[in-house]
Length: 313
Ligand code: PMP
Image 1: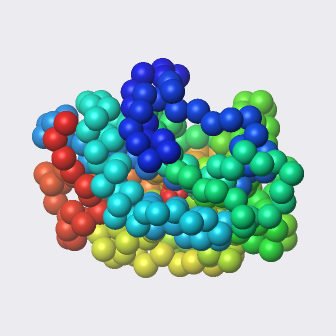
Image 2: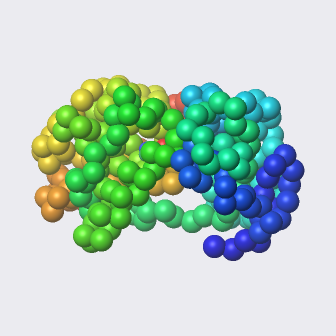
Image 3: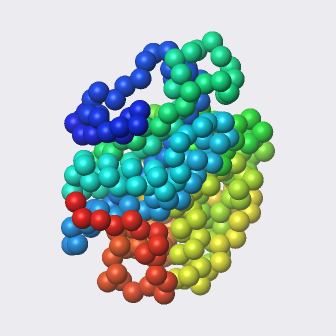
C-alpha cells in the first residue's frame, strides 16, 4: 500500500509515511484499541466525495473508546470535521476508505489495566475500490472459529482485539477456497461474517440476528433495516437464526461498509436458493448503491440526505 498521503496523527496532519508509533505501544501488545471503517464514495457525475453516515461511525467509535476507558478530547462532530478536512487534503477523486484508530498510546507494556494510560487517535485515508465483487454471489464457509461472546469481550463495537477471531476465520475460509466465513455463536446459532452482518430471506421475510447474538452493531445493517422498511415495505425481523436455516433460506446476504450488500450464493458447498443473487437482495443492493453515492435519479420514497456528508474535492 502506498504511504503517500496525509494522516491525522497525534493531533496534527502529517505525511502518512511519518505517522508511526513505538514498539512499546500498549495497543500493539494487547489490542487495546477501537477503530472504524468509513467509506467515502466518489460521485463522478457530480465530482463530489460522499461520506456515508460519518457521524454515526464516530459515535460508535466513541462508545468503544468509552468501554476502553479512553479520554479523547474530541466529540463525534469534531472527528467528523477533522475527517472532512483530511479527505480534502488527500484529494483523491475516487472511492476512499477512512480508518480512524483510537488506541492506548502509552509506551508501557507491563500494565494489564485500562486506566493510567495515555490515549490517542489517528486517522488515515486510502483509495479503496471493491472489497468484494458485488456483481456475483460469493461462496461461504461456516467457520470452525466461533464469534466471541459479549461475556468475553464487548462485541457491539469495533474493538481491535476482537479481530484476531475474524482474521482466523477469514484465513481458514480463503485457504479452503471459499470467499468468506460465517461465524456461529458458542451455542451454534448464527452471528455474522468475518467483517459483515448477515441477513436471511425466507418466504418474503427478512431476518437478521439480534444485538444479543454478539454481532457488531453494523451501520450498513442499520441502513438496510431502514431501507427494507421504507422502500420495500418489509419490516426486518431480528431473531436468533439456526445454522441449517441458512441452508434452507431463499436468499442470504452480507452487509458492511467494505462489503456493501453481498449476496451469498452457497454455504458449505450447498446452494442457497438457486445459487444466484435473489430478487430482494438485488433490490436492496441497487437501492443501497444509489443511496451511498447520493444518486437522486433513482426515485426513492424516503430522503436519505441526512446520511451523507458531500463535498467537492
Ligand atoms: N461485523 C464485523 C465483524 C465487521 O468488522 C463489520 C465491518 N465494520 C461489520 C459487521 C459491518 O459493520 P458496518 O456496516 O458498520 O461496516
